[in-house]
Image 1 (tube, rainbow, N blue to C red):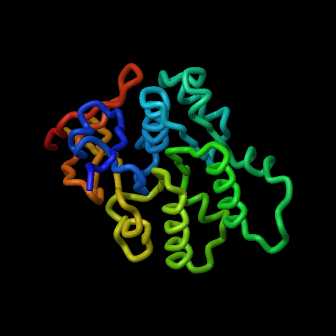
Image 2 (cartoon, helix red, strand yellow; image 1 turned 120 degrees about the vertical axis):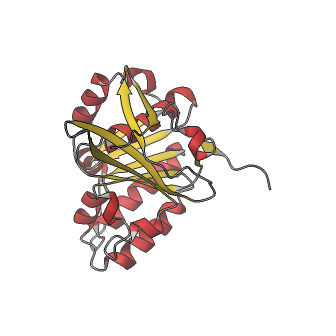
Amino acid sequence: MGPIGRLKTYIEGYDHTLEGGIPKGHIVLMAGTPGTMKSSLTYYILYNQARMAGATCVYVTLEQSRNSLLKQMERMGMHTEEVKHSLHVLDLGLIRKNLKHVADGNSWLQVFKGYLTSLKNDMNFDIIAIDSLGVLETLSEMSNRRTDLFYFFEWLRDLNATVFLVSEVSPDRLFEGTYDEGYLADGIITLKMQVVREVEIQRRIRCVKMRETNQDPSYFSLLYNRGRFQVTRAISE
């Protein structure tokens, strides 16, 4: 059996802590509280995979509009024009517009899955991000969260793509009984805001779990400067 294919995050100083990156085909949870740059970091990974590695990527935003997201990313130095043929951003409005007909009795989740399956068949994307899992759940009206999530994750695996799921949950709560996604995901990258020296706030990143990888589980300080995310060893409080 040959070496595992890996997908670089392009976060400077971080890929070597993941033995070169995220194993291709994994479902990775990007979890954190508001303001931790979960969406920006996820988009950044897809943007650089499209720009540097030629990957075909799809970013599904269920929370904000496509225009709003792209304006925000442009301000951060990620230029839409550079990846317009390989990074496709879809929002909820666009998805609904493209659903010409829906058979009676189909749940929203069935419709959503059908749409992504068609998209996979049309463009054979390598990476897909769904932002966010919480909104997807709300729209889907999951009656039995544990069972429904299990089958949704199984369906995601059948897409034969690397999947990022953005989740607005505190890293400390991920393995509580109500958060089955922590167990179902192949990888978990958490982000948090940390108070240091009483007056300074730092963003921190940690890979809690990554199957098929001997990852460094330490917290790192996450910095964004001139269009690049980078990490440094977290200083002690």
